Length: 339
Image (tube, rainbow, N blue to C red; front, side, top):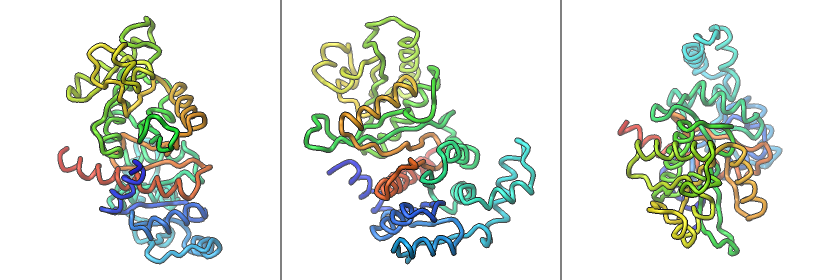
């Protein structure tokens, strides 16, 4: 079974409440209808109800079973405004500003998540990534286990021509531009958690570099080595290699020749790139040249899940991100029992 199908099945086994805030977009409406029909999530759409219903009718989308929430008429709006004011008053936000801001669908949706009225949110088909990420960080906040929010792509290699099969986590390919060693270690640990929950397999992390086991000397290699050391200190049971070149990370025969005392043995399912430049180039090469399907960018390191969409996304893309968000929310609930 393809990794994305396993994610969909896991979401269907325990559907949670996912809020969408771009209900005047046909792609969002079609994905919402499908997610509701296939039972992978309990869908809430935030926005102007009349406009959403009009667009749904035009698109031939049935809203039966989908909850519509109009911030302008919602009884939750006053308490949401006070919560937003409490979160942002130290940054200069006034209560009147909070009242106005809380009525905006993207802000309202994230307030639903942080106050427990939804388990996760999905946006970005209309809103720029910067707005989606900023609202998630400011309103939902960073998971106490981490110090920063980063991103990843779920890369699917499921075609007959793929010699490497299954799902891979690529991180960070969309958010942190030039992480230092500490930040890179945080990205690696968050990506390992993403692999655990989404790939349903033990994470095997490769800290990528142009060097393998010290074959090159450079400050950029030192950063990767330092980050790897930090991860091992914090998570001694995690399988991780670094510094390691891509071929030694994913080809067992090459790893056997080049990596001493490897914990991953050329079977990495998490690829951590040294900076955003490498990560962005890497995932696009895998997608455009290697024929992999890229799902994301997805966010990791938040208290509760909030995911971004490409503005060029399809309804299928939105559906899959909804499924991923449900599984992330399941993992967040489980983690909340132990933290």
